[in-house]
Length: 415
Ligand SMILES: [Zn+2]
Image (cartoon, rainbow, N blue to C red; front, side):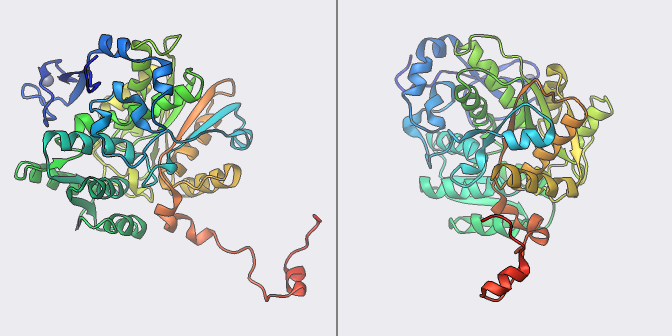
């Protein structure tokens, strides 16, 4: 166990397995494969226990032994350890048994992106970067701007110019540079890859990506701990780049590797996409290995990545674990948001609508089963995408302030 409790051997290519030092790099020089953090699992196993984790802070930093940056160097807004709530009303409505919701709307900037950004910017400070940057579909923009403010870093946040107003305002308020690009996310991402070659900035989802992506594992860590150190039978995860889905699987596996689980996890992993941007779901449905890039057109803008970097890996996880995929329409997304709010009191953004609508579809198709313990990942708050439900959500009645007017409008039976 080292002083700063970081048990990182270096980076390793996910394609060819070549090793690299832990630096701000992200691509293999030999095969152009993506690099991933490689840990000293024996050292982690010696350092952690269920008790040591339970004694840690009520945030994702309780798992710092399994993360690539020291918790005492953390850019911390209190991210993580969000509620895992049993969803019996939703389960009953869908004909399912044991359903849980991991409510990541409760993070500091109201999405799961706070997990990846707190890791990325903590690591960026450790590397000595002064400027944080990112390409974003919205949630990442919110989170990078907020964490940069917290860390005293300058920031450049790049977004498609057609983003929801809620996400624009909740990024700009933190005072960094917000750059709206006339193009879609894939255009924004391409520009950022070019800028990363010009400026010595910490691009959280480019040169910081290997570290950044590790933050998503904490969703699996928390899920297992909150279930009493057991794993679910089935998880349903929204898919944008595909990174979140693959890291949740990795998180469960790592817990077993370091001795925190009694049994080898057997978690079926299913993916959720919007029909208007479903390159990974399409490959699954067509039983193809090729992820064909698409031009996104969906209200689920936070999932609108037409050329997903980890799409192939996500597809592989879903296949090898026996999960499934669905691609749901914009109407199903709105219905999913309203179903979740109506049955469980949780207001999710459009991505949450995609995930709930996918759960519904997979339940109907028998892929998610009634005898399974299911965890559904709700990754962002509904106030970010008010536009989606605003046309169908308003006052039940508008009346004059008199008893008569109320009685005219409502035939109330309850006393
Ligand atoms: Zn390689």
